[in-house]
Image (cartoon, rainbow over all chains, first blue to last red; front, side, top):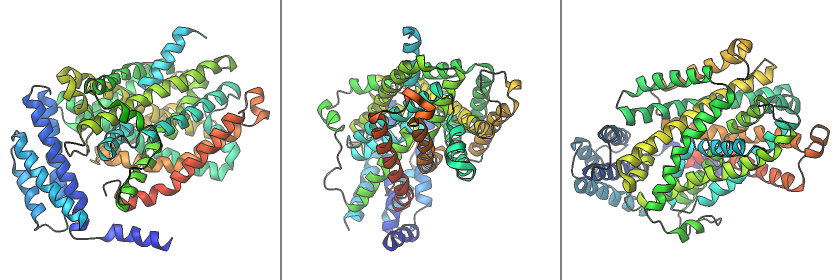
Length: 112
Length: 411
């Protein structure tokens, strides 16, 4: 029971790259989904209204994840800042590249 | 048994089975753990079949709705506590559903989210005011059948059927770290909660009384619960499987309601996307109406007020004020700007805490021969009932620690 309480406390108070992992994951996923949306939009498989709404929400997710970081001056924070500045209709490859960069950081932090 | 009534009942149960929490958690579960959580959906579906059938049977034989029983079986204090907790759980769920309706209307029309929340809520309230119970249930349930497009989309992407079938076997994926194991456990608990939401039993049993079920309706009750809920659950599993197939390789952990519709658009294009969004709209709208009415039923039954949609609104004034108030409160919660996806997490969490208290009185009454006579639970019903009661009690104990340890499944 004590161990559980300790873990709960730890989960609520942690800082640093470890604590940022979930936000890195959120931004990576949003960037990857944004790439998927743009790819399908280019193939004319989505409606314009849906595409606009999804892009807006995904960008918002990246902004929220970036704002929640405990280490704002880090490689992943810069990657997120680049994503936020990326135009809505960016090529899927470009968005995927950012998602992969974030995935690499995520994996290295997880294995550390 | 009228075959048309039976078919309509089954179709209504299928179309009305999926709600916002199942949409969200099925897509997330598939992208995170592939097909490994399908068995949890299957087990939870048997659970809702067991308790759904029991609540329908009690309504038909003892003519007792769930909250009436609760006050008698749990006593006033514990009954009141259960009432309060379930009102909160249902209100949060209803707010999440109203938010979901607004999000889908936003995907369909591009109009602002808040405006769509108000417009959507007004249309739903008008439908509740105008339509009799049977048609409220049927309209949303049958229109929710558009959700079948998710099963069509799954077939269209040619998934590995052997691996999907393997997902029905209880398993924990090998090689998971402690953190990943905790997230897996959190998802398992969340899926049990999402499939066995307490409002489903309140709504279903109250509906049985509204429609004046008697013992002659018991075969239909059994078939509707098993076939209807079973087929409905397959839609959730289709969402999970498509997510595993399309999102996992793309590194996407879907966080938006719109992500589920993308699963359909990839194989079926714009037409598929629009049908998926319409199916989601009607399924979530139905759930919003059900959660709101479940609250009005609960409070009216607990305090012995006149209740039911078979009466005109003015003939059951406190019941009418209750559902209008709960819907308005749900809308207000959404208008504060809270993220509906966050509300889904809270709804699932709060509901699992209420589940054991909801199902215990039902289980006791369904097994009580003095109330149920020859229709009391038999050995199979008793065993399954108590097994599921133990399962949901365990899930309720684990829910809060798992939520905090995994940051709501984020890791």
